[in-house]
Image 1: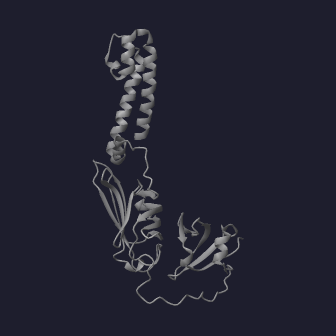
Image 2: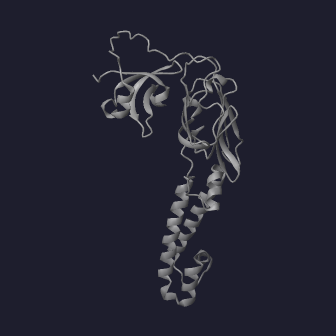
Image 3: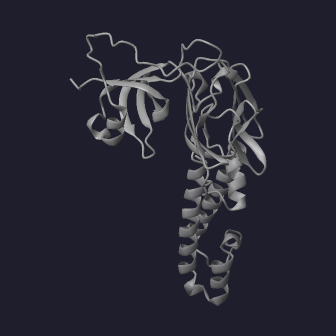
Length: 321
């Protein structure tokens, strides 16, 4: 609504200004100069010969622009700040993550690990507008390896989500904590010695109206990245004896999938990871950096999980019917 009022007002302002200038050509150099350089004062000038219709349109355009800017300041102060700073049409180049937070657009531009907390924050003018914090202090066992995957119904401790948002000067800030029962997938990969590439997929239940997805390059690397659990690591897991199932699962050679993914895209697949978890869905793609993407149904939606080849113990598939 705000953008429509501002854009419509600007278009009407340009049309009324051009109309007023052309209509003033026969009034002499003085009135023409005023109509060209100071058209906003012409509605106040009477008896100077200026036509009525372009001046009425000019007033309507000014009211539309002022109303749009006022609504923008009231409902979306961060966009108002960007408008004043000249960056209103600019999206931060580093903002590869995007989604919604409590129904509001959420594009975090400050993402980092602080101890056992993963913080996503959207800021403007040195002020935090919206933030989402994943707190692993109650689930430290998840901080190992290169991936964290959680689905509703999983057992064990869960990281707590803390979301905060600010909707405007006339509305109090909001705060909500979600202890469990959401979908979370985090994949991390070291880039050199000082950076980490992180891929995130987060979906909360519908009443929270919150989701987040995408990829971001972080400065630094978490201390736990790539480390095993404190318990002695078991010997390489031998695939369990394959039980003959009516569905006809067949083991798929991982290297064959990475070399020729097009032969298997769209098939049902089942992935067993080094953590002992099994995921069943539809093989969606193999990314350019050789990550396997599996689509899992989540109610009426689909959730995509990415697996690094080194985290996969066994992958099975079955032919299309």
